[in-house]
Image (cartoon, rainbow, N blue to C red; front, side, top):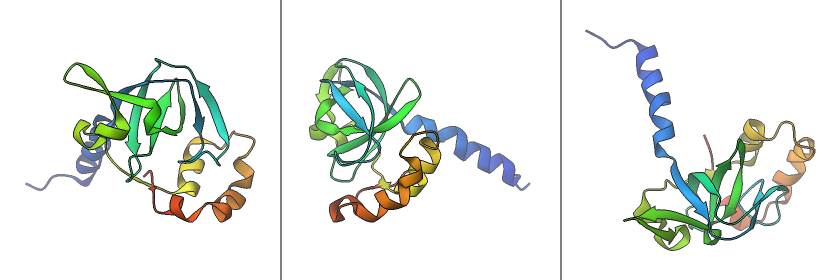
Length: 141
């Protein structure tokens, strides 16, 4: 018997959140609207906040995180993960903690998370001025 298409799609959707990891900010840090300090500020995160790590850039230098419904990017050096009951820096241990890596697509990411932000209408300008090294990093869905 063939499996209905809607069942396969719902299985894919239901397993996606399992890829996220729990993390902790190791210091106070600004959450940015993309993987770099040049992006708009989303909010300031305090040290020792528990966040959800959705993914990190391929260079393990920036991670896409969520805290209380706010989504954005913070430097991996300011983020710890749990490994064998110890806090470890994601920037050093990311590949061994199971945090997924992604490519960043500003238009898709901003359309999904920032429609209500004051800088959202300028997304085409932000897309055009992104540095070349950022283009090689992270896309969310």
